[in-house]
Length: 77
Image (cartoon, rainbow, N blue to C red; front, side, top):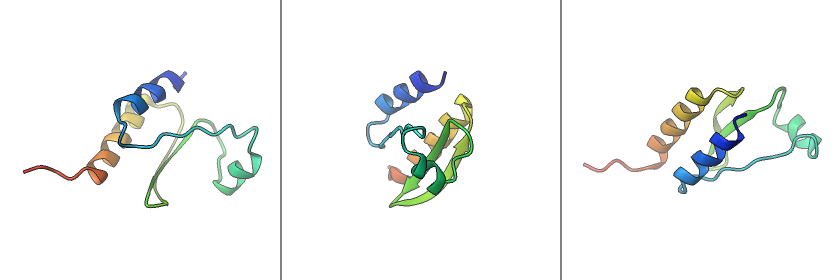
């Protein structure tokens, strides 16, 4: 259900990298990243996890993307 919205976000924000992982194909990945439910969204900066969202909550995903953009985009004065 959230895949089209996720795709839309990736097109709207080309300065961010959006990836999808099939946890059924990469079971070791889901164990390493402690994925207990899908979808799970991880937000990383400089290789470090800075946030995480579990569940298909569109408003919360948008909010977290906006917060990430605030972190990575220098504010113009």
